[in-house]
Length: 164
Image 1 (tube, rainbow, N blue to C red):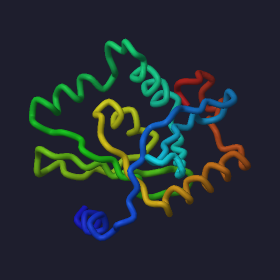
Image 2 (image 1 turned 90 degrees about the vertical axis):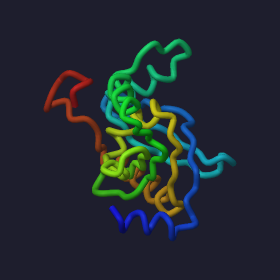
Image 3 (image 1 turned 180 degrees about the vertical axis):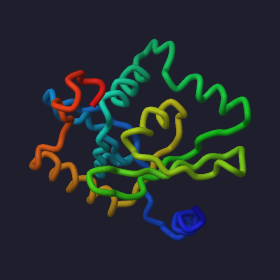
């Protein structure tokens, strides 16, 4: 994790990104969370799992009473841990990865996760999101490649839409 900390410190081109909306396509297409920079010029598409997209939508409801992440956040707050930032870090195959930066405990300062598993968790925490311009461009190319290749949920694996 130290090498990524050094990388974070050395890069001056991190752009703060803000959740903008959620795009849901045809039945077998993955939902996409759209992030934009403050000026709304840079657009970052982040593919989500159907479950994480559903959680993100329910959390954005005006009168959202609960989230599946409430218990986790109650435990983390009790021991003084707070999620401060989410850095969109790298692409591996058709997956985007993030580095989560925590404060409050020496054993949990950084944590790498797939973006499609982490976004609703990060939204619930109210953390800040960052990406480099290079990462944004690569993600836009990746989204286009996935659309052309037809990468999506595989209904033949499990016919239930929320379990693929």
